[in-house]
Image (cartoon, rainbow, N blue to C red):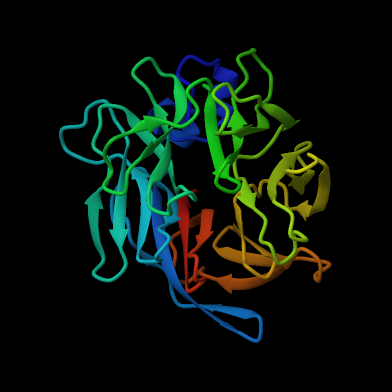
Length: 315
């Protein structure tokens, strides 16, 4: 997603949500959302052939499962009468493969996630009329929007870390300054933002309790340089940052399994590595004969780990 008033540098960094404002080589890339059934036996995953669930030419991105595992939320540009390329949130129902529009506003909404306090409301990054990007939440019916962090603009991406803490990808107001990962508590009327690191990737995830030693922690990708990308852990209690393992350069989208394994996509394959037990990453799925030429990007498991959703992006 772009901060419309930000510099061109920031616009290129955000990898984004607004394809018409991206660099020329990115603007024509098609994205679709795929869904695959998952089976796990003796700790090993197997995947059914993925199915295209967005079924739509153009922009479809940022999938997220509902708490009951029955639906997938995602951001999309749809509608014949949509000359401004405005984004809304849509909802795909697994049972009957139907899609309904979840938000219908004059603003654009991105990155839907279920809020952990009630397990039903949906939070989004919203591009407001003046191009400010802040975090909002809608009720379970996609109406009654209200601000989550009124005093925090320039949000590119985010993740809930428990019911009251948020990891935020903050776009710098300064020209040529890299974005940063910051922490905020929603209980504060004027939350203090604690900067964890700059040069961060867009994907933040809460680390499962199975390997977090009963401590609340989240992970992010540190883009040290063009060849060194590192998955890191942040302990919320003391803000201590530690390294988990290195990732292949260019890999910033990933998800955790409940037992502490990290999954990510590269090309048309999915790879895995347990945070403690594995010394290297391993291929666990090859969709080269099923997917068109392109790359697997955003990736997320359903809460019951019986399905996986990801974004396929045209090369």
